[in-house]
Image (cartoon, rainbow, N blue to C red; front, side, top):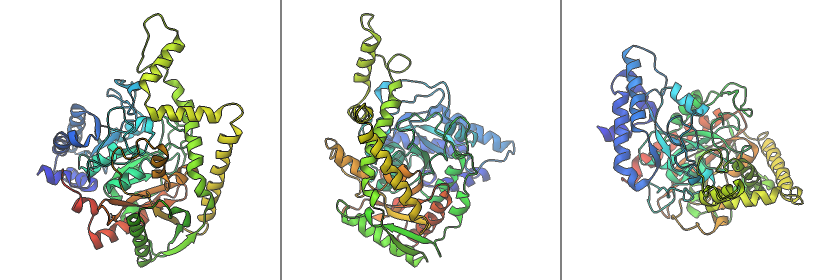
Length: 498
């Protein structure tokens, strides 16, 4: 019975709880048992809130017993990326500098999950401060990909994607600064969505790069992602970048998937050298499938996209060097060297040396250099000009097409440690995802089969204009249904058992 419960979709789980066929406590206990059974090998979670999760589940069952109407995800368990503050349980952001920190308040996203009666199982592993593409930069050790535990589950949100792929949770939350929701989804055979920038509140989300960071839903199906998207999105006066506009009808779009009559763009810059043959093969098959489903495919040329990676790795580190200045060892978190003989500056320096990992230090130094006197215009200023060009090219593209498709990642999941000493090779994992963050558009990754060379998942990326997030779900649902009809669901039917 427990194995059956953990393999249900979030939508199916919610229906069974609402009908009384299952209780929220039964569902939560089944997932907690799964975590206990497999997470020692996977290491998806940094903190499991067993008592808190069961208390939330009991509250859902009590509501149902009283005849109260339950929301569309009431009682469904969720794995929360450890970058959102959670009152009473740790938030570490995968870093030693916040080890043991217990936030005194909930992030807006956390509040919305609780208000919707979603059961939060715990906090998931991640690259420190969301800086990475493999979850190897976590101060608490790497997460394994459930398809092959010797390979990475993507990053920075590898814990959330691995929790889904190993059936430890049917829903998860990630954040996406340069692809950290979509890239993990691609390499684990799951669904990940980066909503339009500003569509999901960043209040209570520990900042990496404020003009790029965006929280979003992760799931095993397009409909599940849409249901979660609807719960967490919406205007928040606590976030000055939050969009004051209605949430697009994402659930309706996911229930009525179709691409008939749509124009789908294929950007020539999203293929070529460095792309794995099996990834390109599955992408080409996806494009042919879209044609079969009634879409018109349009070739697009966006030359500035070739500069996106370089621009991103100036803008994001510059913002990170500013945001991480608050971690000084004086106000909260780790404090090192405070023996009464050292100055505040010395304590701050020792704390940062002990608390930050190599990748975080690398990006702080790079960003500080790019913002320094004499270099600002040459580096940061030039990167912002490229960002404007990319945004303009997206706008021009969306005058010709409804959505754009591409591979989500150039390769499938690579072995843990393979790129650890080569930052540039690691950064290339985000080649296809970064342009969307720079422009603020919405994007989704969903499974499009397995690469023939290694039998590992390949992701199809769908990109939509800002505040047209429903297009992602409309196209994604149609593609998902066609894939399942042709080949079955790659995760549920083919993923190796743990």
